[in-house]
Image (cartoon, rainbow, N blue to C red; front, side, top):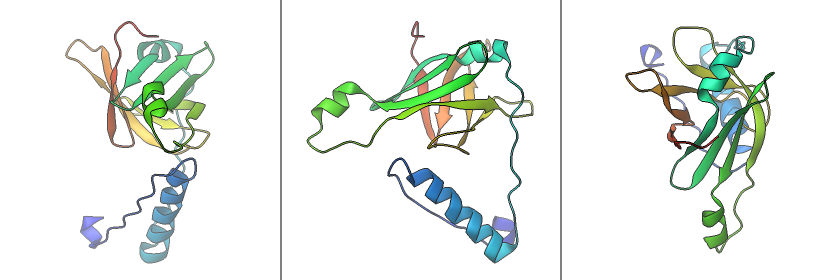
Length: 150
């Protein structure tokens, strides 16, 4: 909050509790130092048309992200690519199983994870000039859509 000359940083990248830990540290600092209490964000009701637009596989160099819909909900699963996991000489953290996500109110393509180890994580979808979804932001990483993968 630059206007109040205040910043807080919490860096924990261990699963499955790293993200909830970071969230709790930031919430605590904002409340105790500035008196700011975050209001819960409510996603919009499920929209099958929007869900089908974003469903598919997305990837970065080391991870896959799968968005799926069964006609009643939209889920997000995140996993380390099998070849990365197999090549590692150390035990890798577990994958995040499919968890519900919902679109947020507003004009953009923002979403929030509503359950599981990434609960509360917010992000957005990227689109090309024609409106096709080309990527998804998750925790500051832009996962690119894998053409033809569902």
